[in-house]
View 1 (cartoon, rainbow, N blue to C red):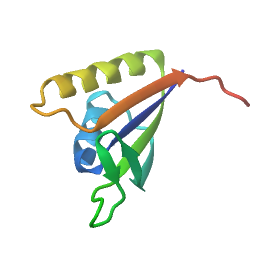
View 2 (view 1 turned 45 degrees about the vertical axis):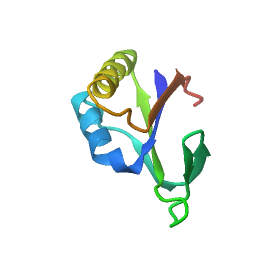
View 3 (view 1 turned 90 degrees about the vertical axis):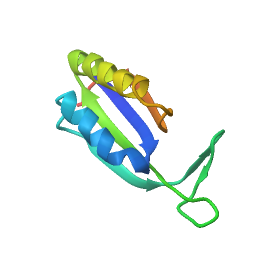
Length: 96
């Protein structure tokens, strides 16, 4: 099992739901309205710093992890401009 965190621009929310559907991922936790700063600028949901970020937190099997990575790589490769999307994963061990 793996934990995967997808951090993305709120503008691509619908595309992210589609990517999860293509990878047959039904279980997720969704965090919305997140503020932050990176080399690409700030997102504070304000006039001065428009936009927000979102996160999907996913618990995936080894197979789902591979399938989702392939779907996301294909999505990113077929876009003219790189979307604001970062994917992180780490092994998961159940505590209880």
